[in-house]
Every structure is written in C-alpha cells, then in structure tokens.
Image 1 (cartoon, rainbow, N blue to C red):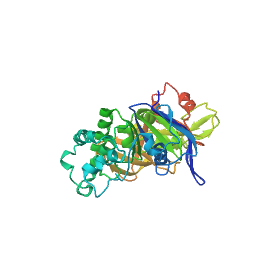
Image 2: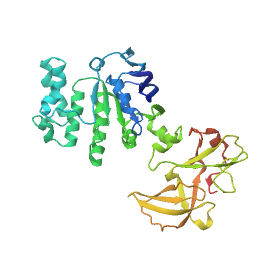
Image 3: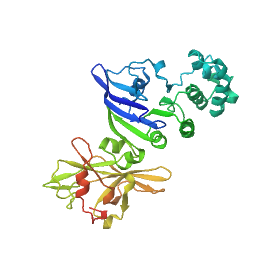
Image 4: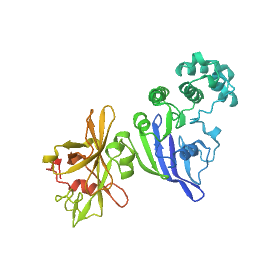
Length: 367
C-alpha cells in the first residue's frame, strides 16, 4: 500500500507547463530523489506535495487519504528548505521547539523530544547559540532537527545541501541517509546533483521539462536508461551519443565500411557509449581511430577527449590512472558489443531492436 501517491498532477504558470501529468507512488520508509536540471519542475512538485502550491488538476493521497485540498499544516509533514529558514533571533533550542509551540503541542513532552533530537543531530553543545554563530553544516542539522522533532513520518527536502562545500556535502549525505533509515522516515528529496541522488535514494524520479523521464533505481537509471536524456544526465562524463548513418537496412558509424547494426528497418538511430566502456588501443592495428583533442587528469582517472572523423561533437574516453597524451595524437578505439546502447535519433527513446540486431558472436567492436 502506497504511503504517498500522486495521480495525474497538472500545474502551469501561464503558458509554461511546470508539471505535466505527474503520477507516481512512494512506499512507506522509502527515500525518493527528485532529480533533474534547473527549471524541470522538481521544486514545484515538492511544493505541491507540501500544499505550498495548488495543482491545477489531479490528486495527492497520503495513506490513501485525499489531501489535495488540505492546507500545509493539515498534511502532517515536515519540510527542510534550501535556505534552512532558521529564525536568526532565536537560539538553536527555540528554533527546534518553535514548531511544537506553534502547533500547541503538549509542553510536558518538549524537554524529552528536545533531548532526543539534539543528541541525534549532535546539537547538545549548541542549544544556546544563535544561527549566525553556527557553521553551514550545523545550521543544516538544526533545520533537519526541526523537521524530525515534529514526529511526522513524511519529510520533504528541497536541495538542503546546495549551500555546503563538497566535503561537508559528502558527510551530510551519509548523516541524512542514516537518520532517515533509523527513524523510518518516508523522504522526498529534491536535488540537481546526480551524486546525491545516486548515493542516497532507493528510487530516483528523473524529471525533464515537467514530465517524468524515468522512475527507477539508481542502478537501472545508469545501466538501463530509457532515453538519451536519461543516459546523458546520469553518469559523469555524460554518455557519448554518435548518430549512425543509414544505408539501406544497415546502420554505420560515419564512413566506416562495416555496419554497427545490420538488417534493421528502423528510422535514424544513434549509438550510445559510456566513456569507461571504451578502450584505447594501438592506432596502427585499430579498425577505428580518433585524434586526441585534450586530456584531463581527474585523480583516479584521466578523461581523454577525442575527435572522431565525421562527427562534430567530441568523444570522451575514461582511462584508469594518470595518462599523458599529446594534442593531435592518433589513438585506436574499441568497445564490447554489450556496452552499446541505441536510441531513436528523432525522439531520443531507447531502441531495443537495434541492440538485439547486433551480432551475438561479436565480442569486441573495432569497426
């Protein structure tokens, strides 16, 4: 039984469609990440769930109860904002207790709940400080603590780590996930950072221009993308997309004589390759060569940007460790047949027929 359900939610701002027929279910205790680029509708969706925005049509259900018309306070949920939204003139203690006081809850429970939450959030030594006296990470803990102390089992978070530096974001990701699991919270978490979504979420809802592009596990989003958009948004660097040339029922990589896909009567298709699935080989014995444009040393890996004849967009290859390449150097390329993804060029959707049409006996591709 779903804990949270959205049914055909539609929301527009004038002529701009912010949410286009959004439907999904969240199970109790599940961590869902709403992921996508700026302007795709993820914050609007979160605010609509919270009741801060009203949907033009559709329904929102909590525990099978329709709450579409209820006010935010009636929905029994907690929300953590990007800006933390702490009261600057109140101490940490007062910030944590503010919601309980505002709702007129039993004052006899305040001390116990404050002690539990301040210990959980490691705020015991900071209760008398003002927000201005706290670091960014400590302010984030207060904001999260204020959500937890309410004892609501549904928690919404709107890019809560975007104001923190990279090292602190990493530790806070672990802390938020640990707290969510410990308390059994059902969490809907908005982010534009794929690392946050991939490392924290049970499921990811990938949004693109107001509609759901793919709703899946992090593993499936990476290994089984439904579209070019999903393939290029998930993974760093983005998946290489190479439009194929159709001649009859065969599809070729630029001017290469050997087809990548044979006997496929589909429209124009594109080949997708992850950077880590391409191997560099000796150019003298390679069936496919490219020219090195640049290389970037990333620590554990080196990204090699190559120019492939017949393609205006460069191809990126990821090789392990530190490797040096000369600009203009010619390198050979090869990859496993199983590493190939195919997409319809017209609408970007996955073309599974093309993957089945590849020769099963061909274990390597060096066309």
